[in-house]
Image (tube, rainbow, N blue to C red):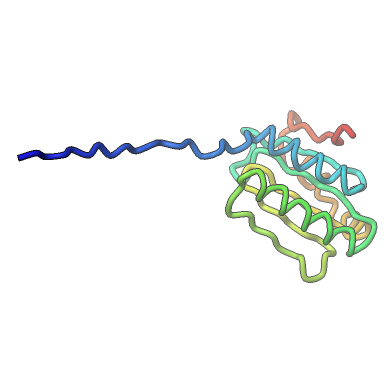
Length: 137
């Protein structure tokens, strides 16, 4: 009998690597800067909060700009391989929250941002060592 043996090969492919929290933060800040966001502020939460490693707060001049920034950011996050992106507030675009896992993003119209003042709230709630800085443009 002449038996033929077939060797099946399994080729392992590595999925594209996800960005590190720092790379994700940089991607978010760059996207917001590209969209002319106003007053981009990053808050380092590493080791201070279990919700994320960082929070970014920024404003748009109008509901249209806030909505466009959120849409553009969602597309860039998806392109970077981020899955499970959660977005709230797109209906009105006064305050849009984007949860990308390691970085939480809050996009506001200026008067709504002034009312909630998240930067002050978080700086008072967290230890003094928390870094609240404006993103470098």
